[in-house]
Image (tube, rainbow, N blue to C red; front, side, top):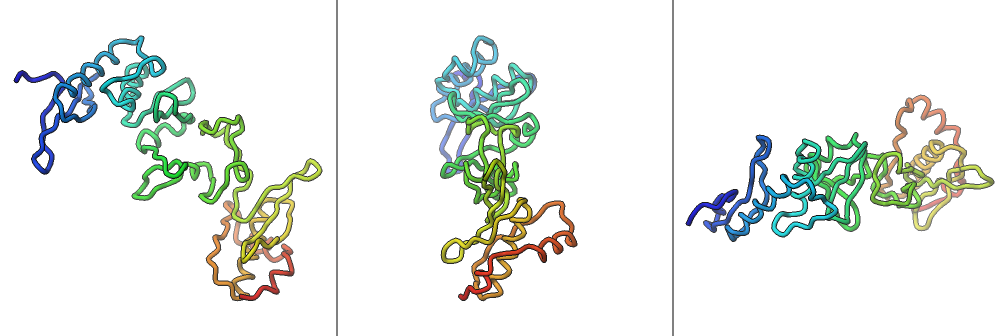
Length: 262
């Protein structure tokens, strides 16, 4: 049988034969997809070549038959922007799209290009993760948003587009555990609470950091009272130990916390 262009025969560990489709573009070898049928591998190669040569083909107007959509994104990006990424990124003016499908994509600032060109985004239970140093890392952590944060309560998308992860579009409302921002008389206050059996109000404070430190103080008190629950503790970035200790000692917390028993 005559060798088909762009098709390479190989074997799995169990001896089963399969066919890899790939091409070379601007001196770069690009793997496309693997098939059990050599003709399908060839058609994938032909489709990829067509997409690279025909600039009328766009992500909006073309649905590939044999070429995976993720690879289509990669190929059109290198064709149009002269940059090849192994992840499905297409660069726009001042930002980029990360595609899952034609109608399902995320927006990111160019500052994140290096990171997401090397980290594939996965969905797990409605959350977006990347594999980083062997761990699943929620992409919200890049914005300082904690894993326990609740959308709409702790952070929000300013323009209402929950796929727009550009930094200017994400507002962090509550960055600390046990702290909730509340608005009263056109001013913001910060309520600190801790969950023991039910929720205990620790107090209401003028600043977010005071509320976060008050929560930490409440954790210390309930532990001293014999509660063994493992509470996360807030880290106040940029605050010296001396300043932290001064604020900690002056902050008032609910007297009910001193009456708690295990």
